[in-house]
Amino acid sequence: MKLYLDEHVHLTVATLLRAHGIDCLTTRDAGNLGLSDEEQLSYATHHNRAILTFNHRDYLQLAKQWQAVGRAHAGIILSKELALPELIRRLHRFITEYRENDLANHVI
Image (tube, rainbow, N blue to C red; front, side, top):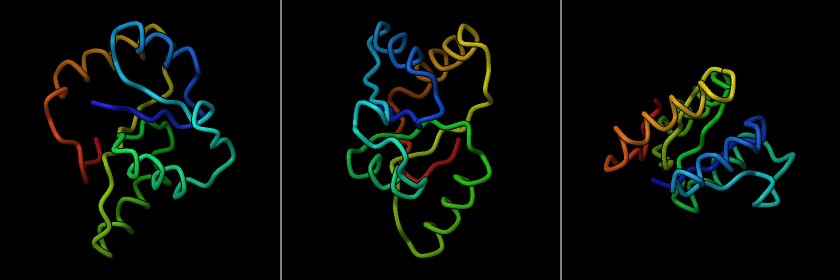
């Protein structure tokens, strides 16, 4: 599983995920700070990465819009903003459970 972290996800999350062997890229790493949500989702999809975001409302709307026109994405992972240790624990558990699953066109 390859992840792309939305710009609101703290950079420490990427560092900790990488330490656990998880392939993740941040918007900062990609030089994409300030791009629209749709541009972020397009980038993630182009690079076959599921996007991790706290922005439920906008990404749920994007997923509906893309589905309505038959546009595919590589997956959207929605999370609450949690304290870093709890967020990392939950993400690690999620990745362990879903590592072999194709997240394409899924919103989790």
